[in-house]
Length: 171
Image 1 (cartoon, helix red, strand yellow):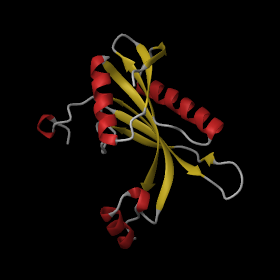
Image 2 (cartoon, helix red, strand yellow):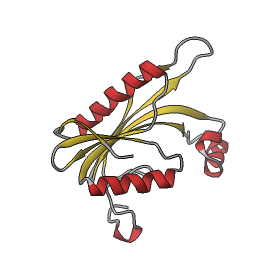
Image 3 (cartoon, helix red, strand yellow):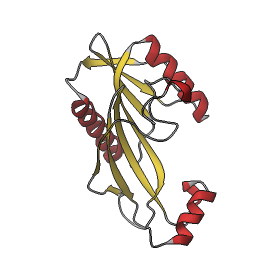
């Protein structure tokens, strides 16, 4: 699962997000799906691609953390399909169900393509709904951009930070 160098460095988080968006949109247009991929920038300004080849998510995260530490990664973008549930405050049953089941099992789930960029201090993302009609070609919705933040929630995020809760100052 070693990374492949791809090109010279990008100047900031927005630029690596744009690289991830371009990659995700071209893969989706070609294959109507996107396999998990991380594009990471090292401290010597090299970009490398790390495909998600491990089925077990915890093993994948451990491998990515090890690679990113060994290669001195300073920022990365994650590209991945996922299930998401957007909860409405007025739908108490949906909120209760979301707390009890995985998003992939929730009745109000949506298939999405997530492009998420992070450094050690900030993150940003773009989310696309995957629209799969009964007939015809799947497409992506326009992106929903998340505002910049100092942290992300979820085990697939914050791969450059110390994972132990006692060392975390921002939560």
